Image 1 (cartoon, rainbow, N blue to C red):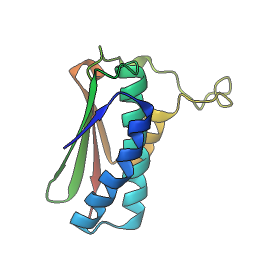
Image 2 (image 1 turned 45 degrees about the horizontal axis):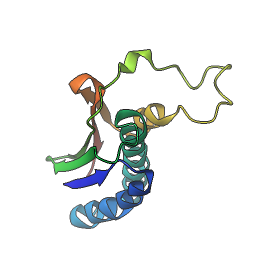
Image 3 (image 1 turned 90 degrees about the horizontal axis):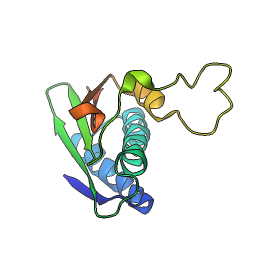
Image 4 (image 1 turned 135 degrees about the vertical axis):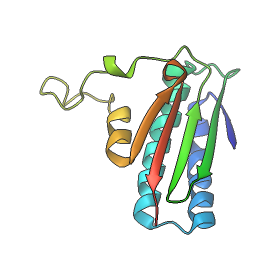
Amino acid sequence: MLKLSSNVRSVSKVEPFVEKLVSRYNLDPNRKCDILVSLTEAVTNAIVHGNCESEDKMVKVRSKKEKDCISVQVSDEGQGFDMNTLPDPTTPERIHECGGRGVFLMKQLCDNLRFYNNGSTVEMSFRIK
């Protein structure tokens, strides 16, 4: 498990965490990129939107290997959110906006994406060989 303070500088700890996963499970480099981008987005969202960068709040990252996939869970101490209310970043009026693509990217890169605890926990699953 990885525990991070809710400071955007903490995002730098995501890459070494992913490197350990890749090494431990001998993952394909393409999966590494998918996990790294998805996890970086999830941790950033947890810090900025979930915990409102309140450094007394923590973000927890857990991983587990199942027979044909790796699941990574990110939890914050915030109120959560309703994923169904997120605007579509691919619409013509939003396509040029800066930001707002984190959940969209996670959906594209993960094999399965679930939200729990009113949206304060996200679980991303990645199929592996």
